[in-house]
Length: 391
Image 1: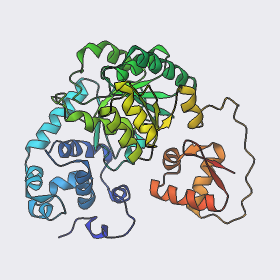
Image 2: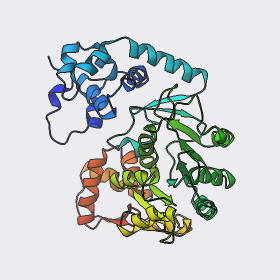
Image 3: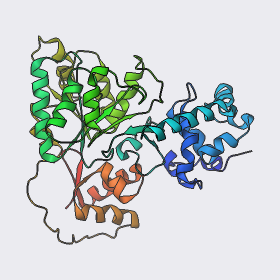
Image 4: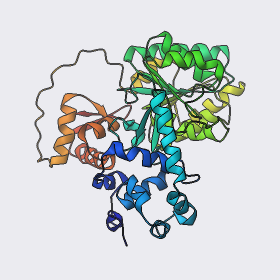
């Protein structure tokens, strides 16, 4: 027996997201089943997406025989047995009841309001829990991270950088931790820009508790998000996992004070892996919490910045000129329908590849290929900050 999608998995250049277009089930109805799958110990987000693709939907995963599930690559008997148990669905129901009672949004990777930047990361969470009024799909977003043992200079630098980012209406993302994280959130509130806190535990608590007041204020225009269900404690192993959301939701990551090892460097490595821009503030070679930043710069893993204006300029966000109607570009080549989609979006405004993917409604791999073709033809140019413009 083969699932509704299993027969096409062997085709080349088909992504999980292409496969999921075959799903006929109403997406909101899928949520409880995706929540249930995410609660299976050791399954991981990539295997959940594979299961959903093989079976034709999250609900259909629970309708398959255990023997069929065992034959899916990298699933095995233990996970198949967990899927066959009713326990995970009951836990999922309790999670959704909590969400409804506490005004928590449950957003699956099949939903339109799932963070568009995060969606294209291979290890993106299948389900996110969100509390707050702010958008998790902002026009511009920057992650600000660093040591928990921030110096006064580090905190002042953070505030100054955030103040400059506020000029471009940038949403600031961080982890609500001690040190640079909380300094970034507080600076965002001070300068009236949205800020998103990514948590390493469930939304039934705030850790550290001393940051509860700041977290409450963040909900007004920003949000708190996590992929951990209620009851999950802020255990040490959860923080590196949390960092992939911080890096994946941002157009760029800024590191301000970091030791040679630590969570901020993990976030920077993840951002590099997602092909996002990374910036670091340098420090004296003798300072313990400058070593990580200096190494990122030394090994060409981050661009050197000393101000928020440096970031705005690198990301091409510093233009203060009013937008002018662009004349119709004369093209000397015939465009395919997909190329025309990308070109028509760029006629309105310059965009990053992430925004082009969202606005053109094409897979990111296809958009990247189209942009390369258009660059060869001299139709588009690649600006600093991975922004594309029509020539």
